[in-house]
View 1 (tube, helix red, strand yellow):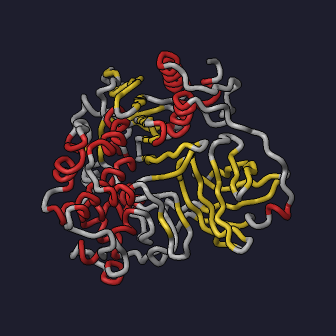
View 2 (cartoon, rainbow, N blue to C red):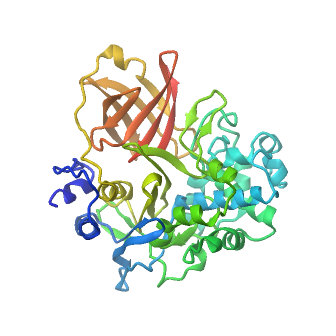
View 3 (tube, rainbow, N blue to C red):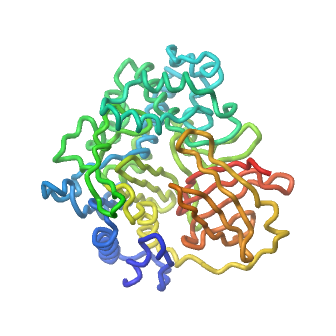
Amino acid sequence: MQWVPLLLFAGCSQPPADDSSAAMPRAEIQQLIDSIAAKALDEGRLVGLSIAVARDGQAVIAGSWGWLDRDAGIAASPATTFNYASVSKPFTALAILTLVDGGRIGLDDLLSDVLADYPVRDQGASITVRQLLNHTSGLSDYVAADTERWRATGAPLEPAFVLNWLAGHPLEFEPGTTWSYNNSAFYLAGLIVAHASGRSFPEYLREAVTGPLGLTTIGPCDDQPIGTRARGYAVNGNGTAEESMMYTEAGVIGDGGLCGTATDLARMPAALRDSRLLSDAMLTEFLGNTTLLDGTRIAYGLGTRQGDLEGIRVWGHTGGSSTYVAKLARYEERGVSIAVLTNTLDADTDPVAIEGYVAQAVLGLPAPDTSAPAITAEVAAPYVGIYTTGASEGLALRSRITHEGGQLARRATVDAEDRVTALLTRGDHAFGRRDWPRDRFLFHVTDGRATAYSEFYNGMLGNYSWRVHP
């Protein structure tokens, strides 16, 4: 499988030369995963990595490579827990939905009704619980400010910091009018769980969600000692991975803060289906789509990213913190779940891409199609313009869609670097990335003009950008 190393890294992400039309046997999948992991550790500046593949809730493959603690010489193992980062969000949503099933709160209850001490009256009276969980609340995102606070003080995150931050920042948009990924909303959801249940967030999560699902390793990172939990690392300006103290921040709930193994994460989707943890109505809400006030449908449920890959329905989540990157993907019709966890920020490897390569083998997908006809300036015109993901300080991405060389391109500035993504036409207002052809840019078009676009990474919604000019 000489193509595997070429697939892993930015700048060399060409599709494989071979074309598998059927799922590989388990031994070959294991060999492929070992090869991907070895290359990631050898050339990717990655310190630790864990991958699990589950079919019908049973672990088919589970392995860890590299280091739990590099300096202490403690190797990672399948029992090593990693920070799930934003892959914690589905668990927060499940906690909320069990409370809805129990009649303690309602999805359309107002924030001010379920969190009486929320400090901004007009915000609390205009945002619903549902809008917190589907990223349509319009709240400002506190994360960039918290990172600055943590670096300066090293103190645990407290609710007062988040609430004070929100009190000083107006809504970015009217709730329900657009979609913008938001950590503040899920932090508030964690507070609502505690308020409505009369328990701490970790206690209720364990009693109502992870316990009934049999996911024994999943819990607050704060409670997991070194020796079990992987240390966090970040690649510095010299290209070397060094320990990052950012991974020790305590007090994060709701939007992140959960740790666990890759195996338990991969087992979650089938455990949820088999346990009957939620009513059919709440499971539908969890795995549904979001509809904006103008009728636009966004492929995000309540704490779950949605989509499809080559006609196979997929849902799950991605996560990235100051030191950890994670992905969970569930391919529903195949009964397959894949979890990828790493403990190194800014490494050359990408867990989203790694998951994609594993999925290609496990699902028996053919190599992605890189061919595409050229399009004229007239065909491109409805899409050309400037778009944004929001206005939150330090988090918003502004991009320009252009027509270059007979194709669309997305130009954006990320970390002071101009990045150009070539887009290949796929019809029906959809475009694939040249560097990863299974990714999709799906433009939302009204009256012959794109008003927004959704980005899908390996089938799953990644982001949503709305048009701001012209």
